[in-house]
Length: 262
Image 1 (cartoon, rainbow, N blue to C red):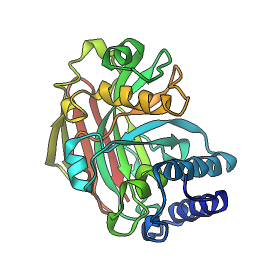
Image 2 (image 1 turned 30 degrees about the horizontal axis):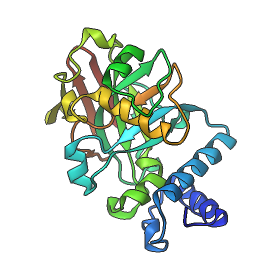
Image 3 (image 1 turned 45 degrees about the vertical axis):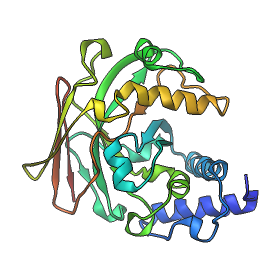
Image 4 (image 1 turned 90 degrees about the vertical axis):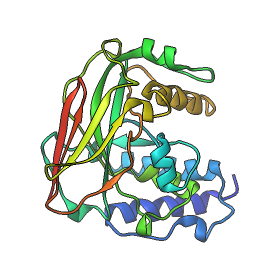
């Protein structure tokens, strides 16, 4: 860790305030090029503490940049992870207020809910599937606090991986009832298909994303408890939305998720 505690605290307040005020900022490594990976996650941890102290409730975890399309789009080479809170939740078919966001984008994801704990190192797809209670469709609305969505990997980790809103819907089903690798996804915006994808776009299998998360947490001496909700990362690139847009994402065997941007 290269940054001192006071600097980490200040950067957490800086980013969390930018999120609450829907105000963009330059990436923090511009002023702190010496920031390392441990610093980045330490800032994220402090942002979570700020939100929980304000009364937010932790609702799950998320993986980011888990598809090759997303990695290419953002110019990075490794997945990352962040946290989810109840402030981010919006109902299926509901409205998402653009005035509370900076430059939102949507991405389609397959979410897992565990029935048994998972801990790394050495966690693999088989462990994840055995520990999964059910899977369900989800749409994440990401909204980087960095100007023009320009960031490096350390800066976006500190910014809680661009977390902003998410919507779940459709139907929940046991993982063994589905071919998650081949599960097809279609994104529609204003009635037009803008993207298609499949579960295999997420690290070859979405359960591999959960296994990677368990292994990353294991390096920190942590585990995924039973009952954890995990978003596995976008199966396609993220697509920008504007006020007035309507988005529907359809998932093979899992129904659909929709939202309006107002």
